[in-house]
Length: 349
Ligand code: GDD
Ligand code: MG
Image (cartoon, rainbow, N blue to C red):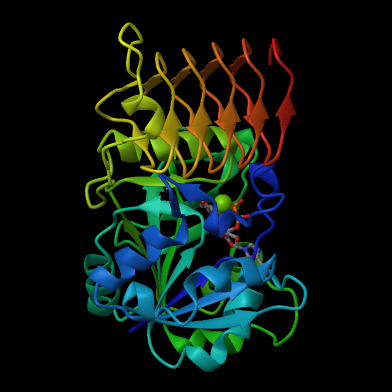
């Protein structure tokens, strides 16, 4: 078994987080996102993984290298310009001689891959697509199935009047290498609009597997926050988060009457952060080397590495980009601030 991760999209809906950082490596609870997919594949015994890249490829390959640090073998297929989902799969052809598990590089899941592969093999499918139920399918690919599990229809980004069921493409596939013949080389080509309809037209055995495990596409600021929140609250079965005790010079140097910084039981604060007296961290994630000044309160938020937040500020339901600087007595609520943002004292956002 081999795996391919489609990780070449620009991540436009996740701006501003993806201006300097490609979506596949935005940190989720202080780990680059693809770590979670690679770890899941590794645990399913799939250790040959190709990353299909296009947008800022070096920022991804610098992190994962040849995969040795992660206990897997990583190959790269880089597109000069984006070839679309199926074009990217075709472009990785030299690494895909066997049955392959293919992941959209932005879905956070604890799916049992072995079960999907067993389902695929039992039916001798050419392609198996994983489905997940969602409330509103309009942002996804709607998939209708027959009673025996065959795919009847695939409709990408359906209009409200076209919604006939609640099962959508989870962006997880098992594909046999012979279907590569339906995809032209070096041309922009899409799984969703082109390859899947042509599998149906050619009567290929194309099956759907409906999952009931955790699933989330992290591709908007709101869902990115949801992913962090779900992980720290233990809603994703197979991933633990590291909670190291935070011991900083500033908390050990307290004057007798100053209250030490408080971090609740679910928050994850990197051990290199500096939390000054009176700081309160509630249901939040703080990356490496953040400095939070006296009496600032951070709640339901993600603060990326190197951010500095002045005294007596309040940050709620927000994402604070890498190395952002926020002045004192500021209030930030429901915001997503890009890397290196700067807010003066007394800002209200
Ligand atoms: N290499 C490469 N080249 N990767 C690409 C390209 C490309 O040209 N275009 C997109 N990708 C990658 C993205 O990086 C992402 O990981 C994945 O393919 C899916 O692209 P998105 O842009 O995130 O698509 P989406 O979320 O609107 O819809 C897709 O995912 C839904 C599930 O989250 C579709 O597959 C839907 O059918 C599906 O329901
Ligand atoms: Mg997506």
